[in-house]
Image (tube, rainbow, N blue to C red; front, top):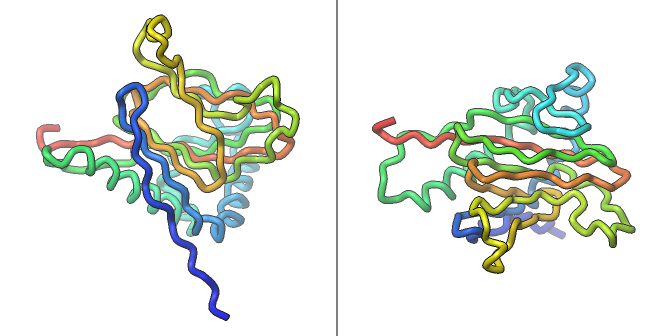
Length: 210
């Protein structure tokens, strides 16, 4: 019996705070996940990592886009292609000279680890891909946003007009979230017993006048 070929889901485009956000899941990633996971843990064993905005856990140096590891390279090329198609769909009237992945790093979060609010203002787009969402806490009724990535409303005072102060996205293995880099983002504490692994990256859009 022939096996059914996994198909990537369509790109989902939406708006939050009047800004474009893209979501996409990669079912075919599951075949590459073990190799990528093993590679990241090997990197962690060799490198103490860096401390950017992470409160606990481990973050790799931001040069992972240069990796030669085959499975990780496959994933990064796929994420780049999805992201550039999404960006170009919004900017068809202007000629885009180039879109560059200027930084990429891995995150490993253990129970209690979180990522503080921050932005990446010298880039145009940021992406987060969930390699392994980790086992969710089965008793998080008092903390329903545990492990969620939160994008904060950039418009001060919107709560006075019944606007949301933030929008949250639950971590789902194999899912990509792409959003404007100037948005403040944070990740609530991970409460699962199993570590959560993710990739973060930044893109810079160049126009002919750049």
